[in-house]
Length: 473
Image 1 (tube, rainbow, N blue to C red):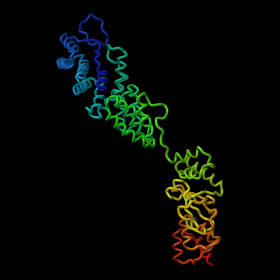
Image 2: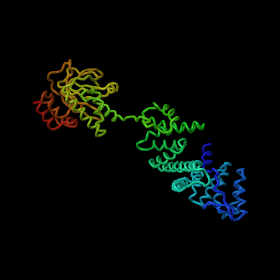
Image 3: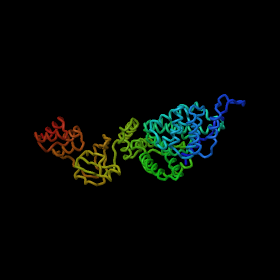
Image 4: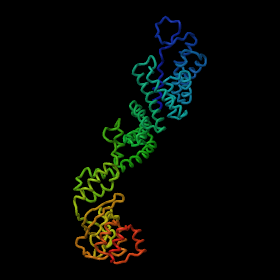
């Protein structure tokens, strides 16, 4: 029904000023065509005035064959196009339009017909559709409309053809992945005919395939879905929704709000000025927002960890991480609750955040100032107290030094074994700190070649190995 309505507008059989039969005493328009042969004049007039479309088309074809050089040959073919459209003979309609273009390449109505049929029914090569659409757009500014019709009707006809050319040009640009050009063409087409389902859907695709995507594309597809349903084309509507909802979920993070968007679009003529859909924020964006909405000194340690985790995501995230870490260091000695993930007498791996506690994943490494009398059991919930000395962002890990476990008994002084030093180094304790511990507590073993090789593999430096050698003296 839509295709028929569009073609009826383009092919509306508004005759030019009736051709005159020369000689004539009547005053004529300067541009009026004159048929000098009475037989030719009568044949043309008889064919044009026929009411039955099939007979009219046949009579006009006969006229063109009989008078191939007639001054009204183009007029006759245009009337024939209208008659073929009325009979639903798409093949003859397109064939006749091409005959017109062969005689008059700038004929806008014939360009509009070939463009429309080629795009809608794929009756000609895609390249030809694109070429005819561009020719039509170039000719439109010079097109003045048929003579003898009201100005309003001429404007309506011109607008309809402009919509066809822009819609087809948009489709060609979309196929070429020239999304910015496609959007420009589709917007112009929809300004003329906002209820064109195909143009609305394809503009939606254009917006959603851009990088970054334009969320107005969700509205255009929602509008196209409503137009398809109004035409009884539920299969098309469902196909559109499958594509759009997949994009919507990726952009928004869930399907929330989709059904409401589709319902609203049915009664709207254009996308709202407010954002159609809120974009799901990335974790890095959420971390930055957490920092921007809070005083760094008042952030929980879990929130501090979240901000610090994304310090390398952008310059703004880096600045936020710097200020959060400064706030943590300003607090000096801290007492925090953790869940023990693993532990030795000198080193505890713990989880701070609820997420890490549930996953039994460490996000803090605690270097005890003095070894504990008893090793903490994994899963135990304890408080630790110390100074945050460093952190790594990916995977995230705080390091707390000079730490103690309030209430837990600790050994006042115990010599370190080779296994103790190896575990310290493997657990992230720096060689410098290990050297300090060796100097404080001494060692209970003699350094030999095999032990030296093992400790070097764990990260021991010459300074640490020298301290070990002296520590046994």
